[in-house]
View 1 (cartoon, rainbow, N blue to C red):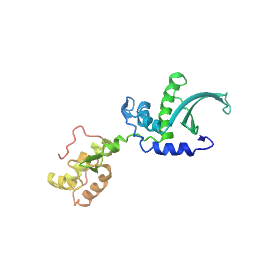
View 2: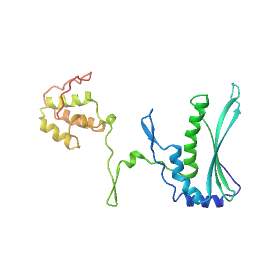
View 3: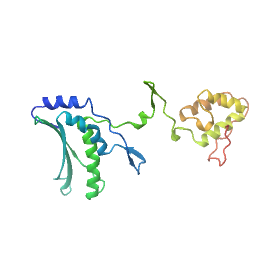
View 4: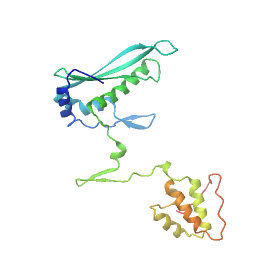
Length: 230
């Protein structure tokens, strides 16, 4: 990062501005990743008022330059410059060489918009809203309660493993109530609710309790109609 010769005034102004800079809300949907993100407008909404009140402004400009590549012809690089300026004349500046997904103007425009967002966040201190974290927080009666996130589909055991565990339990002589009581101690209602982190523990317990009954063969294919305790 480059700066003006003195930065005392701009540092003081940025410190005051950051007291009131808001979080950038993720309101724009990315159809490819099926997720939301804070677009450039949301980032500006988060900081514009705070910057203006403290005599600060952000200027973002671009340039193209030719850089030699070892063993290759010179390659054109597109560069984003983001400068935070203060009415005193002091400034901070950072530059970023863009990485293009396509070597055409559409690729330049896409990379530039992406880079402007993150450069703006970095130079003034904007933090995007963490939707996943906010979803776990319940602000009720003036108190903040943090709830455990729900298990994702990928963190649960596969139907194959659930079926194997059920068959193992049945051959050990476990009744439906016995099985539900055991997994219920870990907070599960059915075999398909079990998380991968608890699978080995449960299977080991079932195997230790086994007497002279043969252990069922672990299926090699997913059953078409697995019979789970429900």
